[in-house]
Image (cartoon, rainbow, N blue to C red):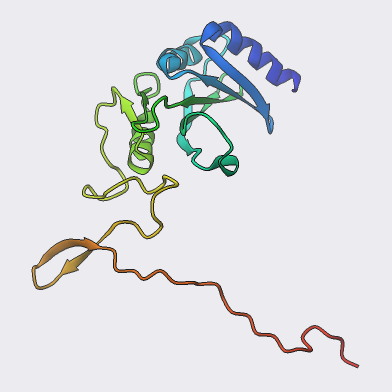
Length: 200
């Protein structure tokens, strides 16, 4: 680990103390893990602590670990991942928090810490089904309001469950079961026996 990352890890250790569940350095960035119960307070400390000053939330996303490492991985299925930037100190940090319940994945919202989390959390809810407790307007943002399920989950069927279309007879949009027939789309390659052989 570089001296820059070691210095950042020392500052994070000092600021979070017992709230820090783990830390790893990879590809020139430090990733820390906090427990779901400590997530909101850890976010506040990362923003407000003088030696850290992570004032900018660059991204918030979700990772679905279903089937990861060929199914040998143990632990929670869904992780919320924050990408933070300290403009004043020119430092980056990745924060990971696992949702404790796979059946109802939920963590606290960090909108009060970083207002930019608003649409990121709505997107994570829409596509993965992660609930952000305390979010003021947690509703779908990319899929239709009547959409069933969460399409970025690894167990979501590739063709979906329902499709919608405009029905000119009823003069409205209607929902119906998916009518797409699964098919093999691997191209067939035909080559002559002498393909690639030198001429002469």
